[in-house]
Amino acid sequence: MKTEVDGRFWLNVEGKGFLGLGRIELLEQIEATGSISAAARAMGMSYKAAWDSIDAMNNLADEPLLIRQVGGRHGGGTRLTEYGQRVIRQYREAEHEYQRFMDQMRENLEHLGLQDAPDGWNFIKRLSMRTSARNQFQGRVVRFTEGAVNDVVAVDIGGGIEISSVITHEAAQALDLLREGREVQVLIKASFVILCEDVEGMRYSARNRLCGIVSRIQPGAVNAEVKIDLSAGRTLTSIVTMDAVNEGWLKEGGRACALVKAPHVVLAVSD
Image (cartoon, rainbow, N blue to C red; front, side):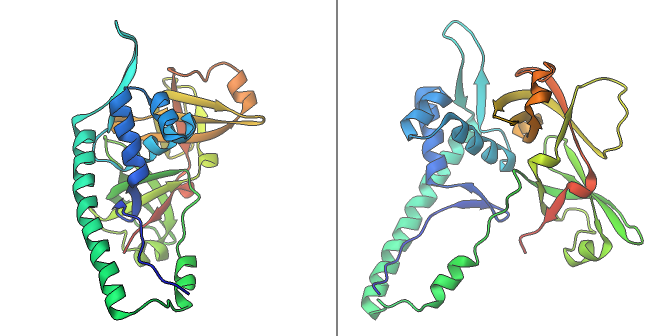
């Protein structure tokens, strides 16, 4: 079996895929066209897929990558922030060095005559796993409360947003979560995100209440995908019934709040 050196170059944020070639090209197309829909067409991808990629990047970025412009003399549009432009430059510089490394690896492979790969490589590929949770955020532990059985861990995901998770004391110790500053990933399934109106004085039992602007509603036959723009470019995705959407209180551009029970917030570490 012929063996070739190949690979993908990605920039990760604490183990989570942040930037790859496809996402960089999407950002470059947005910068060139000033439009997410036009960029998606140029990339041969759907508008929804483009938005999902942007949301994934923004949720892991230190600062927003894009600025949305509404209306104006020349109409609305989207442009990259200075931070977004800097990310592209840094990625391209790193990619150049990566290609030099890959070229050197190919030369070494040919020189050593290592054309036959062991069967173990197929096993290693199968070990690679991805999470099914739609909402993934990078954060740091800012507070924790120990209990006899369960602990409450508060994580700052940026923009002044805190998310609390309830996990067993054993798990918290195993993941070394009981110390401030510990870097963690926050995972929340979209089906666990309950949406409600942003009403002052509302009482609720969920520990996490995150409010923002409804940026997109993607209807389906039974359910709809709703995205809520939080602060600092963070976006939260929820799956709701079409009956809830048809009630009329969920509207793009309107405010809504997301309720997430602390036991539904999963914490993960990369080391």
